[in-house]
Length: 211
Image (cartoon, rainbow, N blue to C red; front, side, top):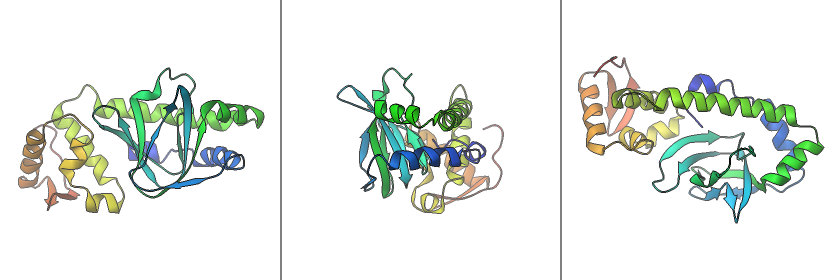
């Protein structure tokens, strides 16, 4: 999930690619259009999602709140220790190329091909991202959360920054009210702390510590 630029730079790309290339020899890659959804459990069977190309959002069932995003190369669902992964789903935000396999088959392949080192590096990365998510999203003020999400939007690719309004980006990722978010953004824009034009975040100048 895309929570921090610093954490993203530590992504163990080589280890992820080792896992994906090995599994690609055992299963056919598929393609999907933006909007297609993938569950991490089907008919009681835990599934593993391997993303080779493109980008996806990870959303919460019930309200479709965006918990984060994954960008190729990446994986979801490789941990056997998650008791019930049905509370989240994956949704493609771009054209993607992927493999979608039962977790049991993936773990068997990993065992047979001695790929546990790569799995370990990937899971360490997942733990780092989860810790970063807690730090930037839990137990903080509403204003601090808005600031963290503005920084996250500023770190997104050009297409996202050029097409997704700042308010929508924040509201898709928090249960805050639209009026509250719009008020903070409007005041920050008027104060010259950020530059927003036609709803799009153009630039962050300097966000004040308090609001």
